[in-house]
Amino acid sequence: MKGLNVLENIIEISNLCKIYKTMETVYALNNISLEIKDGEFVAIIGQSGSGKTTLMNILGCLDIPTSGKYLLDGHDISKFKDNKLSYIRNMHIGFIFQGFNLIPSLTALENVELPLLYRGYSKSKRRQKAYDALKSVELESRMLHLPSQMSGGQQQRVAIARAIAAKPPIILADEPTGNLDSSSGVVILDILKTLNKKGRTVILITHDNSVAAEAFRTITIKDGNIV
Image (cartoon, rainbow, N blue to C red):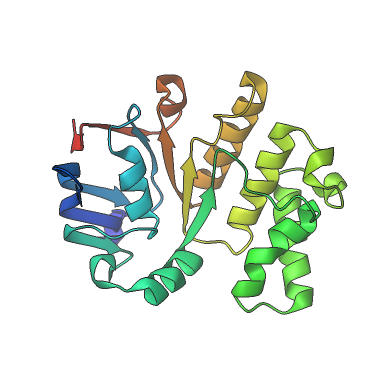
């Protein structure tokens, strides 16, 4: 099969449920199954309350399912505890959030360096990888600026540099253009498409049909079900 250049699944979800029990039983995800191949650019689209945030949290190893199976690059995530989830999350996934999540007191370079510290890189390697990542999003001239000294689009590009600095195989982008004007949003989507062309698996979470249309495949979720 490899000779035919068939892509392998990097994500496989089978019969996955996420149940919250309060006054009543709520199925945030109801018996979901899906596959995402290594190197795909996939958009998961749904309105508020659809279950897309719950699915994102599970895909990103921020939460575990109530039942069902989740294989991430061959690892059965549904059986892992917090420490192992943290390790897998750190090594396999780069996160991009709507709110940027930059530390205000750190420069762009320092913000990008910080996750590399937890990966055990030396100071010199952290600095080089952070610089290379900022250069890849055309922000090397702003690397010593604080977040408050940059536009929203520039801050999101710093957040992308932070996500890709250690070259994780998966980029998980949660509403990455939600806080940006349309021109800045186009720049961010172009960067994501470029990352995908370089081999990264990109999973884009959005409620916006026009943003989802930039992906090569769209998965629609409604009321905890894939439709």
